[in-house]
Length: 115
Image (cartoon, rainbow, N blue to C red; front, side, top):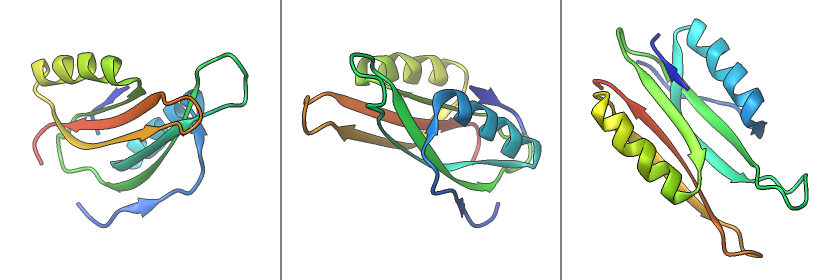
């Protein structure tokens, strides 16, 4: 989910599925905005299937800024961190959440160029 598109962050309180989040990020990118923060949680809507939801706050994207965001388990995010660093991006926001019932962890991160 890499986008090439500063001001105060704009919040969205809606928890989004990954598919919906992709659409919202693309729409906001078209308006010159990029994620400032990301929050994530497990989505238990489908028993037996691991799914996540996320929500964002937004800020004006500085000129020529590229960014990338991901949600997943810590091992997956570690691999994305390496790939993003190789692409010249650095992590600008990260959060990890632990599911109390299962003990599983989900993380979400934003990487960006410049800053």
